[in-house]
Image 1 (cartoon, rainbow, N blue to C red):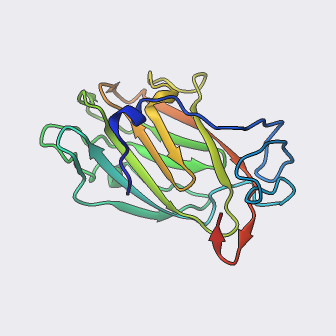
Image 2 (tube, one colour; image 1 turned 30 degrees about the horizontal axis):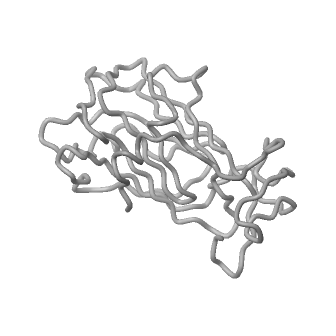
Length: 203
């Protein structure tokens, strides 16, 4: 697990040298230049871009510089990845932090944090980072994650793109100082590109 420098956590996402035409599916053609030789716009991969990947979920806070004692693991399929009652067991690493019962789903090109089953409203504490960390073990058919941006039209929580940090196999979502109740929803749009593989290693 890599928790980034607090300054990095708040920086806007930057995808260098990327010019993308249209990526409705992971294998759609696009014109861009990023690490030439590793991205193959002509390759075809499943539309569910993380399908089959193993995922680990953790709570982390810079207030006490710790992760939650336990983590949750799942395999991304067509169903629910992390149910509300399971996520609620991820106690805050700091004594006074909340542990809301939210559902977390990865659906094709979306990462969704759904607070509809939360019975007790609350607020995440102020911190450089107070939120959730997702680590992925990618499979050969998975695609390269290029960007993760808040869908402001669907989300009800006031997060912005600077609250999200990502790498191809790692996503951090910072809920610091965010109030929540059962109306809370955060939808993050994921943008992928096809990748070339050598053996079983994702490039």
